[in-house]
Image (cartoon, rainbow, N blue to C red):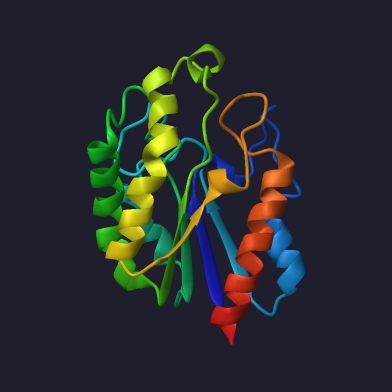
Length: 197
């Protein structure tokens, strides 16, 4: 079974202090399945759905098909994006948030046997103080964004997890604490086990 984890810095495993977790959820999955399931990491810092970034090649819409084409087949595609869409220069409301993810899912849903969408964790309620790329509206979007991702999961007949229900941001207000990676892996393990049988 081939599982591709596609996302942003939280899939990459960036910690709140700027280092990279060794104990990130992808590595926990790899250790658990011990080559019985192929776990592939496709996390990129700053990745958005459809929005340009000051760094090049961060728009998923432009790279996801090339990324997925590296794999002969994909049994489960896990998409965890949205945190960077919350930035003040990107999605301004839930409709824009939905439009971006919908456009992305529309082109990738046929590339995998199973699709799992994970909505992002909650940003710190003063995220604009911690990171000037965000404003208070970013925090408000992060509170309500799960509604968009849940609705899109139903539209695309996908599995769904709400990361903010079990994981939280660390000191920088936007990246998983290590405990969140452990909890996310523990949520994914039984799902993957069922799909692999």
